[in-house]
Length: 92
Image 1 (cartoon, rainbow, N blue to C red):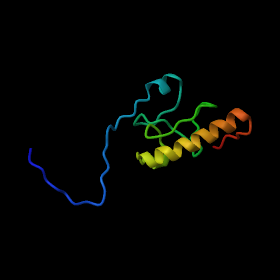
Image 2 (tube, rainbow, N blue to C red):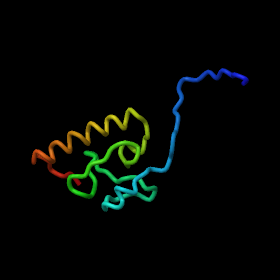
Image 3 (tube, rainbow, N blue to C red):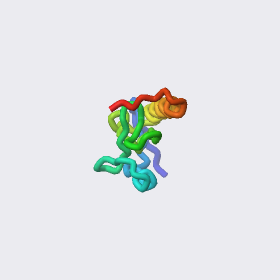
Image 4 (cartoon, rainbow, N blue to C red):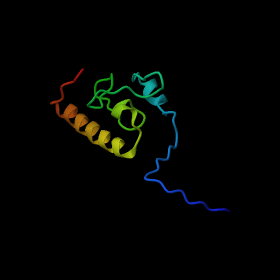
């Protein structure tokens, strides 16, 4: 039970490095060589109407942090809304 104190400006805890994307892969969603879901800037995938966000994707330059996952979630939600409403135009 010895305690030590480490002075630092920040700490990032990494829970896991392997994305759990088997379901996406079984649906035909494209993955990169590391198993992350390939997404465009609007978080769309290769399958029309399927959007993904967070650290299982190639979004945010693979910066797996909660702040970027939240932002990607907002982008994916807006893109999905536009897709459902019919005002979505796929970007390549």
